Image (cartoon, rainbow, N blue to C red):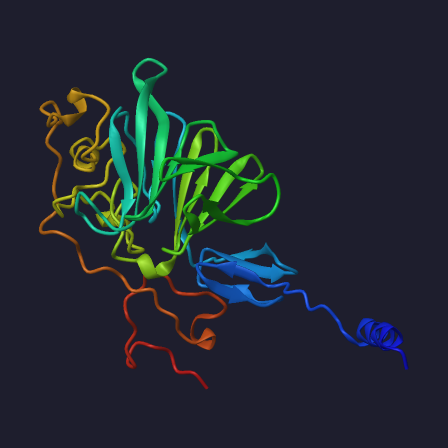
Length: 302
């Protein structure tokens, strides 16, 4: 057989028997997920479908804080209040220091006369990944000062010239969703900012979104740990959550006109614990914020 004929037949054999394998998995924070694999233990469960992340469900155990309009606040634990400050404040952070590991900040600007409105927001996923969100802009963001355009469809790993970051971002009904490895998710809309926290953050988040622990009475906890009585118009509490970086010298001054607020005795009360007891004992509901049951207080289960 001529060499040219042999090469031709070998090429034909390769064409019949060889198959090109295409990887259809997904990636997040350096971890590869196969087709059908799920990214769980976040406020939204994502499933890998042929190389693309898709939303499957939202976790009912997560809590979220809302800041909207001029502005109204609803804390993680459900307290509603108003505050018209026009400086830069910490909405939620993982400790009470001035330089937390993970945090969400927002600046507020005067609007509608005596009120204030959301301005630039900042999602500090970690000390090395800082996301800046401009008011009214729901198709892009800045990551470490570099512009990142969020594609119009699909869920994507946020990637800049320095490489991929531990963030997923997508557009959703006129809003921008950002999911971090920190288990914090931020929803950024034109006049609304929402922060979603996974239950593992209980007892470790503080700020204008309140002290998250499934217990509303200590929501107005200042940076120094003092708990003030719940009110719709707090003053000293939000002032304590100013950030070190402020838009003007007035915001850097200590509030001298803030009225004294009633403080509860001591600091945090004992945080209620999220308790899961047998369904037979409580019907079909999950007991949230209930005292820890003991063998003597639990109903008999047969």
